[in-house]
Length: 279
Image 1 (cartoon, helix red, strand yellow):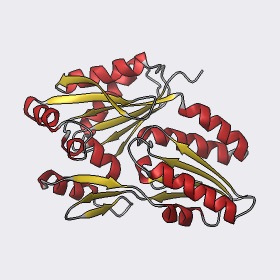
Image 2 (cartoon, helix red, strand yellow):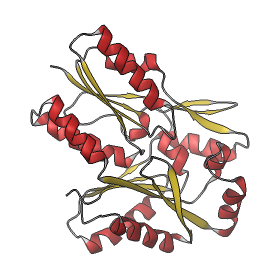
Image 3 (cartoon, rainbow, N blue to C red):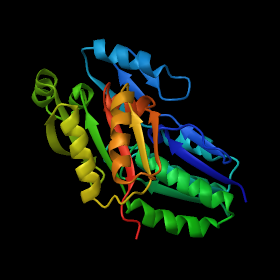
C-alpha cells in the first residue's frame, strides 16, 4: 500500500518529513497578474504588489485534473482542503476522488473539508504523519481524523482587511475604518467553516488578549498551537510568550504564511491553529 497526503496550498506547508506529501496550488488572481501558491512563489513580493494594486483580487481553486495528477501512483490517499465556504477546492477534490477510485479499483481516497485554513490544517497533517509512521491503517486514521477535525480551532487577528474587502468577505467601509483607526479584527473559523468576526480591538495588546481569551473559552488547555504569521514575527512571538505564561510546556511553533494564507492574513496578520479539549 502506498500512502500519500494531498493538500491544497491553504495548508501553509509544501512538505512534511518522512511522508509522501503533494501540495496542489491555489492561485491569487488580479486583473494584471496570477500568483501560483507553490514553494517558488515570492510571497513578500506578492504582498508588496497587492498593497500597491487598486483593483479587485481573489483566489482560484485547483481543478479536478490537478487533483487527479496529484493522486497518481498512490492507492491510499488522504486529502485536506480549505473550507468549502471559502473555495471550490473541496468540491474539486471530491470529484477527483470519485473518478480516481473508479479508474483504480482497490484505491481509497479520503477527502476532508477541514472547515478551516492554514495552521489548523497543519495540526491535522502532523497527527496523520505520526500515524502513518507508526503503521496505522487507512481506516483507523480516517476515523480518528474525522473526530480530530471537531476538536481543533482557528483564531486570527488581522491588521489590514483590504483583500477581504476586495473579494467581498467584509464591507469596504469596515476595511477602510480599520486602516484609519488602527483597529485589528479578531475572529475565528466558525463550526460551519466561515470567517466569523469576534472583536474590533484598538492596538496589538488588546488583540492578543482577545486571542488568548478566545482560545481559553474554546477549550485550549495547553494543547499544541501553530501560529502562521504574515510579516508579523514580533506579534507571533508576543502571543507565544503570553501562551507560555499560562502553559509553560505547551508545544507552540511559529512559521511564515505561504501565498494563500498571506493573501487572507495580509501584512501584520496572524492565524492561530490550536487543539481544544481533545477529550
